[in-house]
Length: 467
Image 1 (cartoon, rainbow, N blue to C red):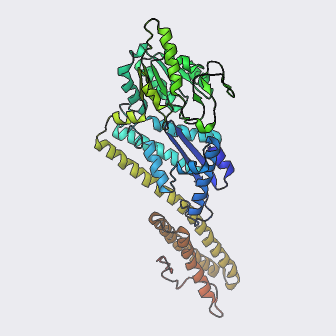
Image 2: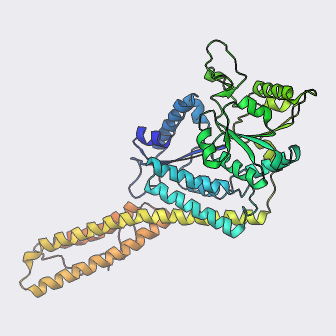
Image 3: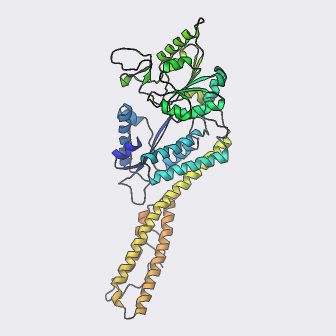
């Protein structure tokens, strides 16, 4: 998505995608042709709307939903609002389980992925690096994530009462994303050794090999043998698991349980019919009593991987993010308040730093302009002196005046940057003082070189002392 955004929209110069089971965020660096020079963080409403529409179009193409539906599904932020949001997210303060540490790693990996795809930009690099530093500061100062709380850990805690002891539990993970990796780690930390992974996209083998777990291709059979299923693919619409059939138009591999239908009908990765079929198969294997082992299903996807009807199946316990939210351990207000104060300070620090960075470019432009003005005046007045001593004294006077003006101009530009004032206007007014000095001196008939004797005390707009 990030690569597509950078390639297809000229005003998008950088992109970082933060995608998890329950979060999809696209951070863009935009060039706004309508923004005033020296105000890189300001976007015109027109260009902001254009970028949002372009992103919605890309999402629509990749997801199969309409562009209107894609556009209405996300919130658009710009400027400091982006900084505030990312720093809050990276610090675990926007998570369902406040203080979770998994998101910090996901933010770092999002930037790494952007590096690999060559879609980052200097501003996005600084933004994400600063967000990670703020996250570490929150973790070390408040200890919000010290107990390892996360969506995955809370879900497994809830499941524990309804499954065999962990060393006897057979677990199946649906998905191969960041939450799947976190789930493998959390299961192992609890002592679970029978772990398998399934991926509708075919990435299970690679994921399983890297983590020393089993990959399965027949999910229906795996469900029948499982005590616990953790679904965190985040795929939402797309391929869904249903009972395999040989109906017209279907191209599922035998035993895969994967059926491709009209996209308008596709909603869940795990359908009720597939779980019922798996339970029936398990009951047959159970023998004379015909009773399948209990099954706990954790749906950790924001838009539901699992059909809610699965929860109505006998001896199946379905828990989703709503269940986890209601059971998430509370945190005292003091650590959370302290964390938010740290984030607020980090946001201010970053914003001021970016503003001063913009001010630096304006200062360079002002310095170059003043230098050019001085050199031009020296060239114009070169033939007006009879001795080298007079010429040297004149040059020294001009450069002293220019240096004083530049110093005060720099101070005013930095003050204006902190106050959010237009930087280019300050630079222009500073240079105007010098131009007024030259022009005023040369306006006198028969006047010699422009020697700074009586400069204006203040510029027209900024109160810059020039003398």
